Length: 240
View 1 (tube, helix red, strand yellow):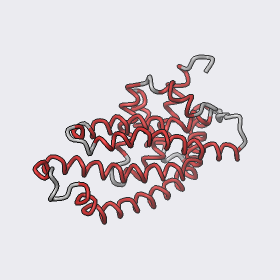
View 2 (view 1 turned 180 degrees about the vertical axis):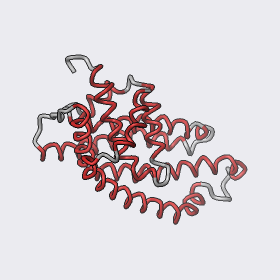
View 3 (view 1 turned 180 degrees about the horizontal axis):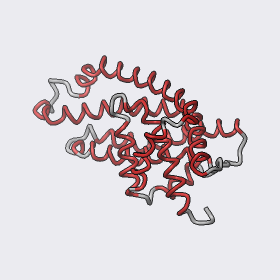
View 4 (view 1 turned 60 degrees about the horizontal axis):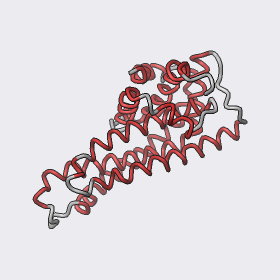
């Protein structure tokens, strides 16, 4: 799991003096959004649980089994929603961070073949495409949570989905900086199963750990860039 090793090393890069300007603003965005998300979760959690699992429901006899499943779904959905929003707002900054990490790692800045303004617009457009793609998979998985006995599989399906989407999410930044965009990325990345599970699984898990989730985004962007430079790009066909 080479991607997982890059993720471990990325924490040390947070202290690099040349990266500070690319880290603090996305970090502030994360603090504000996750703070809002946690406030909403704490304030409305009981109401949501009562809505999805009322005490007079015909499934009341399965309350002990369904309660933790639905509770996990609500927590993950809230955190994931705010994560998508944070990624959308921070997308241009993450692209700059990935470019700087690549320049430091290789001694050469990436070239997408676009102007700065075009790169900023492209990063936002990429984020919208990714969000649409992720929602197409997320909605059916969430719906399984309301269909017994399929809801017993929902946590496992959600883990697989979260790992895959996190891997695509963060690998997009260094690859887009090199002119490889989202539709071209998926055929390249989906064959890397061990990295999807290792990198993607841990990156998505970091988003759910208090305090760690505040730096999860820049850490994952740095790790994805190191992974791209060291392991993915060297193995691309010459025609890619």
